[in-house]
Image (cartoon, rainbow, N blue to C red):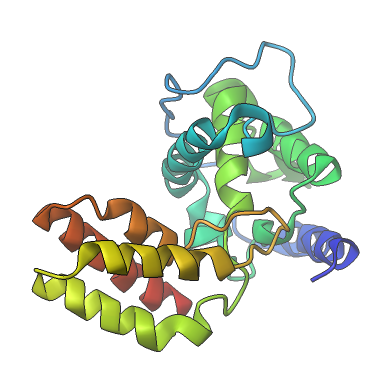
Length: 226
């Protein structure tokens, strides 16, 4: 999807959230531990400071990890698991990984959204803070586009089953998973997708526990894809 179309899809979500009957104001925000992330100052930024081209791959990956936890605790109820919206709220995956997408996101994150006296989205800015907000944003923009794993589903299922049995050629499977992960596109236009293939490859560390966690990651990812 081209940037303008992605931006239009995100803005169309505003109409959805504006007419939704569900009120979000009764949900207490859950704290997000951002100690592992670099400071970004007190004044709110308008562009994501945790992208890899700004902070490096290691810090970016940590932001994705922290953002995943923060999103699942605070955002998934309305925006959907894995940021796949069921229609109640905007599908944030289509918000471009660029400054204009960041500006829309940070405005809503910081101040929330209220219609006719009903809170459709609470203001998270003061409660969770800027670091948590940008970590969540980093996670959202790495979400794969719809159907991203479809062409690899059969092979990923085979890899999952092999890992579940144990004793696999881990180095070969890790390389294959990394190759598959490199082909997965994001809905936001961000350069790297945090797909199930990527997660599985990261778990493979030469231990039986790593194989189990990799198999579990593929099970979850393949289930979500369908």
